[in-house]
Image 1 (cartoon, one colour):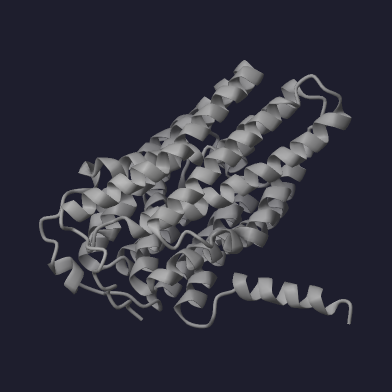
Image 2 (image 1 turned 120 degrees about the vertical axis):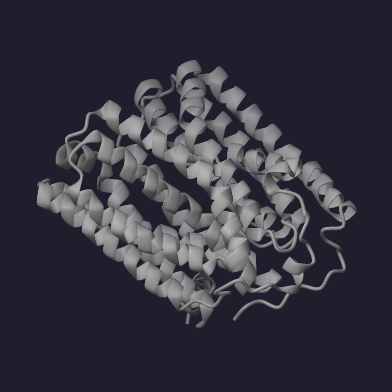
Length: 431
């Protein structure tokens, strides 16, 4: 009997994590399959590029930078295709293309082919997230969208861990055929995603809905400066990613007495907490003002974790290790709030009929994090020590504090432009 409350709590958590049968369940399966392929390839990719293709470290870095830029440049045009034809068909096409492109890695023998292939993969992968968000907006009711997004993020982490575990076998073998097997399994995973996407509901052609027909002349998402600013602020708050993945490992090795193996513990802690609490942490982001408040909370928490990390310099391992664990837990709380707040703004603020384009614009914030984040957080935190951590904390705090007033201004401007009315009925989702 004593265990009943614990059993009930686990069941309740599982029910929150796994969506009910229907479109959300199929989207969950898609997420796990894609994340497994992504985790598999990402874990082995650096060694794959060096061992199987024969590239230098400089060539790998240059090629991936070019690929990242290509992905950023294409998100908005692909988002416009989603507004015209519905997000399902472009998403299906991107998964089908990824299946072919990952398989094509088995035939790459030089730097030029690697750059072209990596750029094409980046275009498809970078656009898949805004396309999925546009599909969530199209298929689900307004009060379901953030919850579904949270479930997908938790399940993505489950799939990523599974893929990373499988990659461990390939890295242990270390042969060229093993790395080719990684590419081919990743290709099969994305082919499976294409098949699952085919079975998802959504528009399949030039269907004009009431909300799209009513807004033929609404402004471009790139000219909606408040929305662009919010996207970039969300990208700044997403600096938690390079802090955890890049700056913190280097900080532990170069500035603390903590063992380097602690980095693996911190990554596992982050992953487990995201899986366990992302759905619960997303409550409150069902409206744009609520999402903005979550981003403000994220800024406060991420600033606090930076200050905690700064305290670990020049102290004993007995002090540094607990502080690093506490700082990482605070970082995860900020990460959970940032993710939910970002989904809320990206889903609630776009005008009717332009969800795809605006999702593409919002992805520019993630592009900022991916291109500038690793350099900036490393230069500040690792290069400048405690002062750098303090500067980084101030940047994150200001980014979070700026989100609520900017969100209010964005909503007011949208209403004044006549693109969205607070009383406008919610369009019927596609089932």
